[in-house]
Length: 406
Image (cartoon, rainbow, N blue to C red; front, side, top):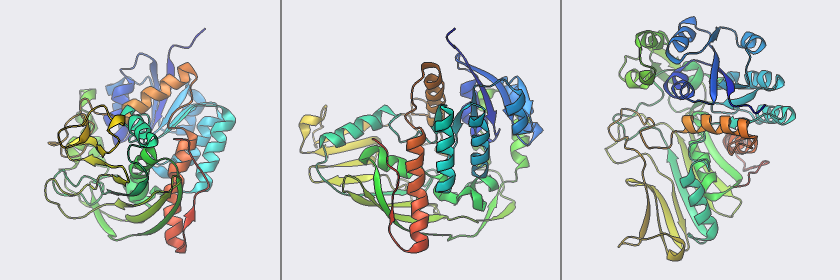
């Protein structure tokens, strides 16, 4: 009998679970939301009430033993990803791993080996800025076809929500997820930068980097405020804590224990090289400035992200482009308008990676397909970040040991 539904369990009932994954999973006709798990009963009860989860657990390993599941969504803090993933795949469960896959290459390779041995499907987040997005797949094909010629250099700065009012200078909540040592800090919270570079330019060959902690003392919103928020939510489509947390008082003092600024130079397999900054800024910027969209410059043209468009290309190879405007540019329209948001949340019509990843994993399970953002992808993106830290530690160039076919 052909399987028509995937039985899903979710571990980690935090902000990304209730804001993005669970509201989508509950509406999928190919998903049976069997169980949710969290250390806090208030959160599992809220998820059962809002999203219809049939079972609740406070112990992850008990959920694995007792619940009838096909797939696990691992939405917990980074320090739990390795043991939680290994326990799931050893029981033959498919997995979606929220970013990052791991913060050490030995751990990432252990996860990858276990997934391959078990023969299960795995999504390694984020799928944002990857070939799962048709626009990125199209841009990659244009670059491979020679629309930019030989790449001269590229630059990218991923610094958080600089265009959404005053800079936050770090996440307003989530000590274990963003500030503790095993979180990996802002580098591993922002893998969108290496995913964007690889999606457009292909695999990375080496990295030379400088990393460190520039701002040690932070203040965040206490954890219990999230539980208070969930208790008052009655509409599952209005369970996005970001709508309120950015305005709540930050009364809890925390220390930044992992790097918060990383400056890298990436050398790509295609011979191109460029700079990448991942971190946070700590003071407001002028409206319309900051953000540091990816810019790529070549012998035959340039590719620029932003400026009101998803991406734009100017090229001597106009034969490769569907059209150009009077100034010679081809623009891919931006999807959705987040200009009035307090925080860059997924907007109607935009590529929502949480939703697309959920759909992609379920489809790959039911249709026995290999995920686009799977183990090889996760290993390569993880090594670009780990390699930056290793290069900073040694003062030497780090040569990549993984690759990915893009």
